[in-house]
Length: 60
Image (cartoon, rainbow, N blue to C red; front, side, top):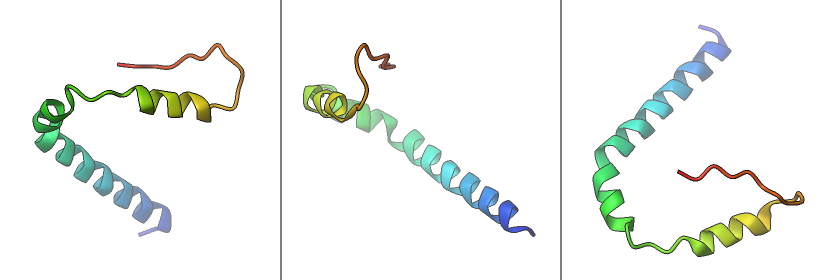
Protein backbone atom coordinates (compact mmCIF):
# COMPACT_ATOMS: atom_id res chain seq x y z
CA UNK A 1 0.00 0.00 0.00
CA UNK A 2 1.33 3.43 -0.84
CA UNK A 3 2.32 6.04 1.69
CA UNK A 4 -0.42 8.32 0.36
CA UNK A 5 -3.02 5.59 0.78
CA UNK A 6 -1.87 5.03 4.36
CA UNK A 7 -2.25 8.74 5.08
CA UNK A 8 -5.72 8.79 3.53
CA UNK A 9 -6.79 5.75 5.53
CA UNK A 10 -5.44 7.26 8.75
CA UNK A 11 -7.18 10.56 8.03
CA UNK A 12 -10.49 8.79 7.44
CA UNK A 13 -10.12 6.82 10.67
CA UNK A 14 -9.35 9.95 12.70
CA UNK A 15 -12.28 11.79 11.11
CA UNK A 16 -14.64 8.91 11.82
CA UNK A 17 -13.51 8.74 15.47
CA UNK A 18 -14.12 12.48 15.86
CA UNK A 19 -17.54 12.34 14.24
CA UNK A 20 -18.52 9.38 16.42
CA UNK A 21 -17.37 11.25 19.54
CA UNK A 22 -19.35 14.35 18.53
CA UNK A 23 -22.44 12.26 17.82
CA UNK A 24 -22.22 10.57 21.22
CA UNK A 25 -21.74 13.82 23.12
CA UNK A 26 -23.73 16.42 21.19
CA UNK A 27 -26.70 16.64 23.54
CA UNK A 28 -24.67 16.88 26.75
CA UNK A 29 -22.32 19.41 25.14
CA UNK A 30 -25.27 21.54 24.02
CA UNK A 31 -26.89 21.37 27.44
CA UNK A 32 -23.63 22.20 29.20
CA UNK A 33 -22.83 25.24 27.07
CA UNK A 34 -26.22 26.89 26.62
CA UNK A 35 -25.46 29.73 29.03
CA UNK A 36 -21.83 30.13 28.02
CA UNK A 37 -20.75 33.69 27.23
CA UNK A 38 -18.67 33.53 24.05
CA UNK A 39 -17.88 37.25 23.83
CA UNK A 40 -14.34 36.62 25.11
CA UNK A 41 -13.81 34.04 22.36
CA UNK A 42 -15.19 36.38 19.71
CA UNK A 43 -12.97 39.23 20.86
CA UNK A 44 -9.88 36.98 20.75
CA UNK A 45 -10.80 35.85 17.23
CA UNK A 46 -11.26 39.41 15.99
CA UNK A 47 -7.95 40.52 17.54
CA UNK A 48 -6.15 37.67 15.76
CA UNK A 49 -7.41 38.63 12.27
CA UNK A 50 -4.60 40.37 10.42
CA UNK A 51 -6.60 42.09 7.69
CA UNK A 52 -8.68 45.24 7.55
CA UNK A 53 -12.45 45.13 8.17
CA UNK A 54 -15.09 44.47 7.11
CA UNK A 55 -14.95 40.77 7.93
CA UNK A 56 -17.18 37.99 6.68
CA UNK A 57 -17.55 35.49 9.51
CA UNK A 58 -19.84 32.49 9.33
CA UNK A 59 -21.60 32.04 12.66
CA UNK A 60 -24.19 29.31 12.93
